[in-house]
Length: 477
Image 1 (cartoon, one colour):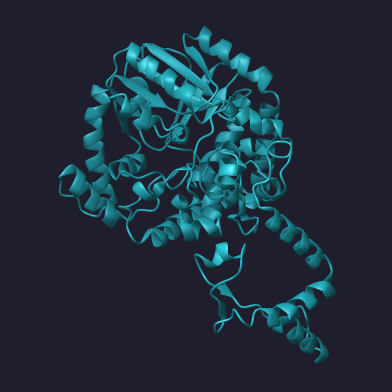
Image 2 (image 1 turned 120 degrees about the horizontal axis):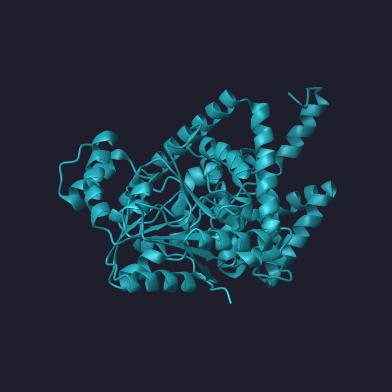
């Protein structure tokens, strides 16, 4: 049975986060959006759209044929000298990793950036077992040093400014750290190089798994990935079952999409291919294939395209909600539009169904996604599941909210009824109105006003529109 995880309480993890989170988030996401746009223009928009369609088809084919590709992957990994472990849930995955570490008496562990290890709370489990696990990706290293959590799928320290990082290094590392990116990177490099050489075990995730050869693909922009997977005597990769793809031809398409969508590069600095054990590398290679709710997502034909995602982070970069509130506001490991649909399914709508409502449905994420994940359709589907329930989960919303939603559907379907309702609301709000705001509303709408005021209802727009039309002004001006 899949483990049901709880939403993360970030209050204890973000108490040291600097005040200008929003400014840093907006600046960094907009930079990423511009770089991606430049990369697409350089490649050619028409060719880019063909690539997106091909990427979509490759990922969808792999997802619908996991019963074929996962056994093929397992046999190829074993034939190459590796070991394959199947983890049904997060607890299984943690147990497998800990058993491998204990069998090899590993005490010092170095890690490659992996959102999946955040999903299964692996660092906490390693720490509780008395092991030292160090994040070696620069962004992850900064976040871990601050006792916080990643705020973005591919840029974990996106919410920090260089001034804050410099102060953090001075406080935690006891060094003179100027607010200069190159100098800060050099400080981290010196600290981490020693850890690579002393490590007993390396842990990574994986961007893709190639079924035809049993190859693990790691895409990074820092040399830490190769350090973690070559220097320690044991390498453990924990990867979701949805990451499998058929062959190398499929990979050539997806790599073109991934780098441009993530950082605007034609190709990432390091693309590493690991097939089992090899000379001058770790003595043992272990691949842990994790389910943790993914097969449940696949069972829902309307939701399975959630798992097309290749974790590029482009949807978060373009999302106006993410830009304003940042990744930690989602209260779960995965943030942005992909977090809104993935977390709601991995954790269940009973726990995280509200994330599906954290969207304006503007569709920017749909236009940006390199593998054409239909975010808006999935968000609407999950909203329906949360309110009405379906064969997968019971409804979360109270009966009064469901009744209100149905009433709203009827009102919006008939213009005369909508206009009549706005007139009624103008008078009904009078006892509650304070200036231009409604500071307190009756249940269940008081859930909103407990945190913020609600703007007053107005019916002036339609009257203004009619007058404008009567004067003969162009309505499309």
